[in-house]
Image (cartoon, rainbow, N blue to C red; front, side, top):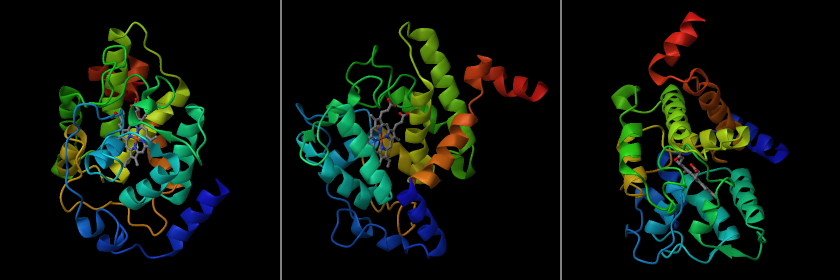
Length: 266
Ligand code: HEM
């Protein structure tokens, strides 16, 4: 956290990078030119994370989604999405620990990340609960369409309030439908953190989120919306995630249509 805070301060006192310089020269996606998109083939491993699947679909991670070293994952998410080095070390390390593997020497397949209630959890925005959808490697079109249609920002883009509302709705629906529903406070925050990347790294832009979430494809010409020199720190990222999580009222009031109204009248 000390390191991350240092990076956040550095970002505050330095100029942002020009849009074309965020992905370093020589790396996949430099100047918005992404390697060819090839959808997953029979036998390829995919997971519940659209961002990692998209990297595999473009060959930035092995297209098979198999035998990925945790260390390589750290390096490539830094270059591809401009997350801060602190995040790029912390999350793959967390994943390695969760899978009882060694961050420095071991590898994983993308589907390994779908161990229920480790990072993957119920009530997600792009997947049905694992009890209904054991293969978490594919997006669920109707959930993604509902998410994309919920934007109230300029051009229908997603705002933090939109994510709070739709997350509350998804959690309520899941609770009603899934007799084995579980979502600890920790996983609620994890869920809001994952979904907040749609606001930060992707800027909430529905135009980019559509191919990203439905095809798990990085749109042509796309570049990370975060242009800070040290990338998106956990400090900055958490402030968006907390805003989304604390904005969720539907789950508390148990009724999506009236939740906002009830809150106002209290
Ligand atoms: C460092 C490695 C990463 C790991 C291990 C990881 C893992 C995961 C997992 C397991 C999920 C499923 C959670 C659920 O059940 O909803 C998830 C969801 C997600 N992740 Fe990642 N992720 C990583 C990096 C990223 C990055 C860099 C981005 C954005 C650029 C991202 C964006 C998302 C989004 C948008 C979701 C969907 C949230 C939802 O459906 O509610 N992830 N991630």
